[in-house]
Length: 421
Image (tube, rainbow, N blue to C red; front, side, top):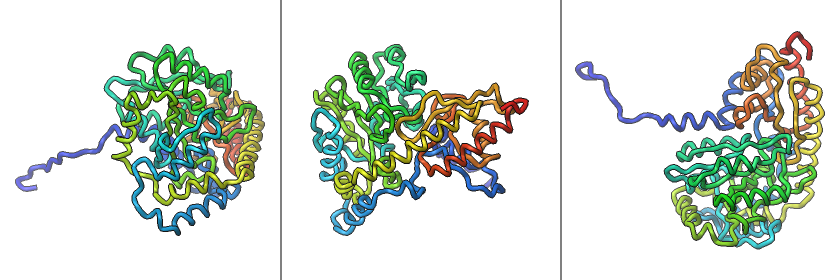
C-alpha cells in the first residue's frame, strides 16, 4: 500500500455460521474422513451417515425414476413454481399423509421444501423471536441445534430414556418449559435411536404440549420405515389436542436424498396455527427462500400414487435383517452395549464402556482412531448430544455391515486394557 499503510477491509466471515456447521452430521463426518488412513487398501466402511442410495440393494423404484423423466418430457415444469409448491404435488402429499390420519388434509395444509432440512429451517425461523426457546430431544438430530443457533433461538434439551425404548421424559419437558417456550421437537421413527413411539406415548406428548401451550414439531422423514412391534403412527393423529407441524420428505422411504424434495404440513383441525399467525409466517419465510426443483415437484403425484408396496417391503426387509445382525454382533463386543434393538429408521445407538479400553478418552477419540486404524466411519454420540455413545448406520449392504462390525471388534480387542476383551 502507499506510504506503507495497511489496507483495512470492512468485511469478515460470520463466525457463528462456522461454529454451527461444526456441530452438524456433515461437520463430524468430514472430520472423521480426514483421518482415514490413505494407505489402507481396504474400502472405507461408511456406517456414519443415512444415505444408502449408493448401494445396489437400496436403489429406488423404477416408478420414481420414470416419474422424473415423464415430468421433464411434458415441458410443463421448466418454470418457477409457486412459493408454496405446485398444486398437484401438494394435493398428492395431502392425500398420501391423510391415509394414516383420522381427518383429511387439504393441499392448503402442505408446503413444499428443499428436503426436510429446509422444512426445519423454515419452522425454526418462523418461531424465532427475542427470548424464545425450543425443546429438543437428547439424543437427537444436530441440524436442529445448528439451525436454532443461526436463528438465535435458545435450545433446551429433554432426555430420551433408553431403558424405556427411548421414550420422551415428559416430566423433564414440563420442568424445562416456561412462558417463552414455543415448541418441542419429536423425531419418529427415531434418529439416532431407531425407536418407534406407540400410539399411547404420542398421545401423552400431545397432551403435554397442550398443557404447556406449545406446538409440536414432528420430524417424520423416516415414516413407515418400521420393522418392530410398534407400527408407525403420525403425531398429526393428535392434532386436535395440540397443533402439530409435520416435517417429511421422499428422501428416506424412497432412498432418494439427492432429489431434495420435502414438505412442511400443518396438522391443525382447530385452526390455531392460522389464528396465531404461524401460517402467514410460513408463507412469508418461503417467499424469501428457494424452492425444490419444479420438475421434481411435478413428479411427486406419480411417485406417491404409483409406487408398489413390494418396493417398500424389500427395503424394510433389508433393514430388519441389518438390525438383527448389528444387535447380535454388538453382543460379541464387551466394550459396547446396545440397550434397545432398533425397530425403525436406519440407525442404532450403542454405549461405549471406556473403562475397558486403553488410550481412548471419549467417543470422539474412539471414532477418530477407528477411522485411522480400521477405515470405519461411525458417528460419535456427542454429535447427537450423548457423550460416549455411538450412532451406527444399519442401512447398508449386509456384507458391508458385517465387515464394519468385524473391524470394530478387532479395534476394541486391540485397545482393550490388558487385552481382556
